[in-house]
Image 1: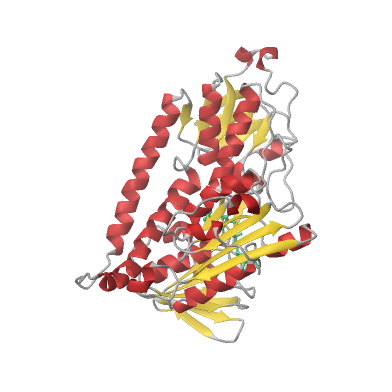
Image 2: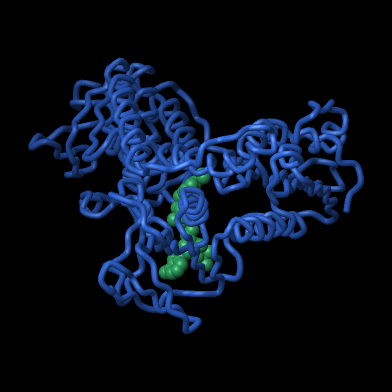
Length: 461
Ligand code: NDP
């Protein structure tokens, strides 16, 4: 951390045009800019593309809208059991896409107003670093006491014969029309979520993943159960499979799989991770260090090796989640301009995969806990959602609590099922606060709910 960080009275403000120049108006950058301005700093922000970054434009927000769209499929199917007779449902992709686009434009506007109201100067242009205290933007050289790099990431597609034919999630949000058949590649959040979206919207969906089972960072039990349920919904899962090459055959793309099979689809979408947006940013004109993963090296205070330059969010490659970038931005603003000295705590960050059903998780998986603690108690419950008793369907809810037997602390909480993201967010407060299994047992359930199972599981497996 800079010696002068959080100690602005040592500095001569007028020496620079701004106290902080933020490059990238995504979730982290906007929050850091607004908070810094609220602490009295003179702040500018540059954005070359769209306000709100990946999350708002080609990530969390439009994805969740698509997840809602896809979920109607099952809602319609279960309606008859509750007495409803519906006309045959039909789906109009262009209506969904255009309504989504309009909503995103509305959010872009809100981001602009938030910055404006906070007194942040917005440059709708690409900014490039000229020196440790200078950026070039809109043809102007601007100086700043601190520069914050939060330029996010972009989809990574490996290079192989035919890779020029594939799309990434960036394009998937704006398709002219849906294909009849799609191949989605990867075993992370994006591939699993998009496989559920496409399948729910009626597209024959193939998920190709090089490993034995997707979502390798998550609890094995939940991964297996999610795979079973996705297969049950008709999603074709091709595990231990890679695409060697893709050829174009008229309107179709033929993927030559490592298993020897040929898979023909209208689109192939790669979701094989993301790389930091740091190319041609001028970082080479500074002492900023880039690591082997091509992310920006920062210390506990988000300071790079160049004392006046900081970085947060996906460019530092720690935890690539919107709320993490936002928290990093708030901590940095407080440290730089409000006398704070906090460091970000990355323990017990809850997260959800918006698959169908959702997978929500906080804390350690069973396998991780067994490595970390001497004795671990596992509480596990798998049951049929109440809605299915009349509505039909083959989903199962799976819940799991991982307890460090020595301290009784709940160190992992996992759920697969409708609303898992919402439920785990609530429980994450308890887990972060160090709740024990005894605290869970002492909590009264809400009946009838799925979530009550988390406070009624008594016998470890
Ligand atoms: P992830 O890092 O989650 O997953 C990438 C996947 O691609 C892995 O399964 C990986 O395989 C595979 N892969 C990587 N390289 C290759 C290759 N050369 N050939 C074949 N497969 C390859 O990335 P995503 O793109 O899904 O998402 C990016 C990030 O965005 C996530 O890590 C997450 O932090 C964030 N995100 C969060 C969401 C949420 O909160 N709900 C939603 C969407 C994204 P392997 O497993 O073998 O390494």
